[in-house]
Length: 95
Image (cartoon, rainbow, N blue to C red; front, side, top):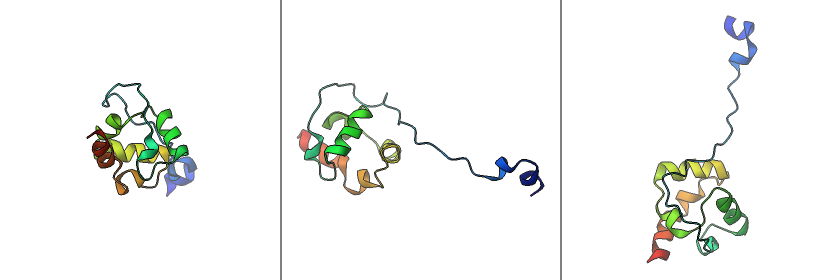
């Protein structure tokens, strides 16, 4: 408590900003596909995904759970990526 009194900023939790997830693990492919074919992705979310560098089904299908959680946080998607199984849906669309 004395530390908190001496340095009040030390007592407050740091506000974390959502960082863009590491994209170096995903396939590099600039071919854009209609991501709205995936349940849970509307036009606005598709635009957010494009902004993050996610432009096609192969990139979604290549994500692991940890990456999906990081992306979900960055997009403020409230758990939709895993809940709606965007990865599985993307794999089905790839055939």
